[in-house]
Length: 109
Image 1: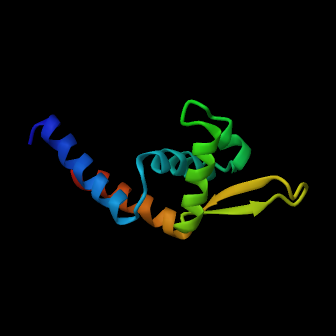
Image 2 (image 1 turned 60 degrees about the vertical axis):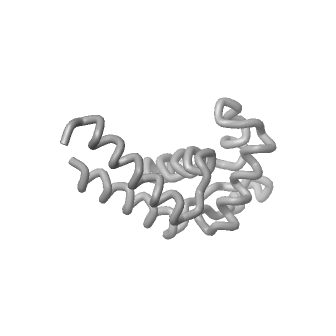
Image 3 (image 1 turned 45 degrees about the vertical axis):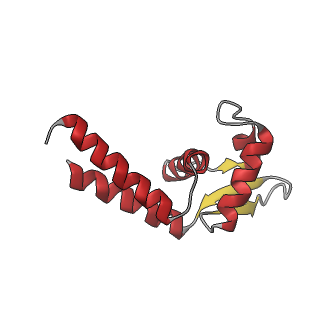
């Protein structure tokens, strides 16, 4: 299989996984940032995500965060030092989504 065909097969399969979890493209970007930071031992806050205007406007980012919470892919956890600060934690469901994507990468290699 040539490289382009391999990529298109991967992208199609990735899109099917995203559809299975009902996440939009913007939600995928935000969820990946949250899960990646968490995997590296960091925790993003709602403010961190909303300030990233390169992704979307603050209102659009906030709506995407609310949607990810409703889909049980992230949790808002109040900071112990300041209850106004909300940490964003990926759920087991989100980790499962990324494990499926990781297995897809292994399969297409």
